[in-house]
Length: 326
Ligand SMILES: Nc1nc2c(ncn2[C@@H]2O[C@H](COP(=O)(O)OP(=O)(O)OP(=O)(O)O)[C@@H](O)[C@H]2O)c(=O)[nH]1
Ligand SMILES: C[S@@+](CC[C@H](N)C(=O)[O-])C[C@H]1O[C@@H](n2cnc3c(N)ncnc32)[C@H](O)[C@@H]1O
Ligand code: SF4
Ligand code: SF4
Image (tube, rainbow, N blue to C red):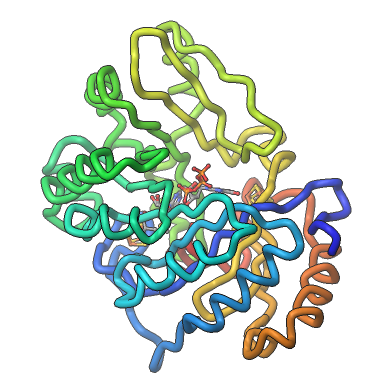
């Protein structure tokens, strides 16, 4: 079966699969008022997830990231990991989490087959962490990261969204942390979302400023491997950790796009900022629908645009990133 490819020659081997919209944090740039259910939510079931992953694996997906909302709030989160791990075509299983349940479950998730974990930590100052996330859980999250490092994960990455007038003084603390700790720290430029226009205006900070500071301090740009996504990575001989910058407003950011997204309600999103999602759920009900599902994926890929339209303030259907998993 042929690999998923778009009209710009980009190949898609990475699926970001959202499994819930629910979240227990209130990050000011994402869900400032917390999660608000719209009616009775009905998220992908385990068997729908199995059918989805099987079809994507058949057309070249080798990496699956389980995301959300907060994916670890799913009671069957460990079963989801196991179901993805059971597919021998998937070589990398990752998740992105706020770290809230990590301390208790890191080992269990590792044993189920999870190999990479990205944890969101927007500030190393506990008070600022509370101010940004709406949860006074800094110590728990940091203990969770220690538990992940001990459990043997291949990669532990930390995501921090760059926020003007909030965490923009935190770089020295972050650098101090990764001097002796083998984590990959990533600074993500704040992206505008449908509900985040004013917040974006107030707090957007260009990643290029951080890049210039890092280069001045001897951090070196790592040449990307062929399968790498849009982050720019840097390393330094005096530091055990590395730094990545995700700068979606930078020129050519989308040229290395290698990922597709499926929402917790089973919609395919060709871009983080697509105009609409395409329902896949009707074709997730039985393994026998796989060929039809694959045909829909190939057909949809022809519609994928070359880039996002964020520079024009067009955020598509994405009201906040919790609705699509970031
Ligand atoms: N605009 C845009 N932002 C992205 C893309 N991929 C990741 N991001 C941003 O980076 C955030 C963190 O991504 P993660 O969930 O940690 O995953 P990742 O960057 O794919 O991580 P790796 O698989 O470790 O490279 C996302 O929630 C988005 O905010 C992308 O393709 N486009
Ligand atoms: C939507 S969350 C889902 C997973 C999990 N709840 C977490 O926070 O890690 C995924 C990532 O998106 C990032 N994110 C959310 N809204 C964003 C925005 N407007 N701009 C940039 N990154 C954003 C978060 O910081 C987080 O690292
Ligand atoms: S960024 Fe993650 S933890 Fe924060 S509100 Fe959004 S989904 Fe929840
Ligand atoms: S903004 Fe859209 S096209 Fe660009 S890298 Fe992200 S998902 Fe791909």
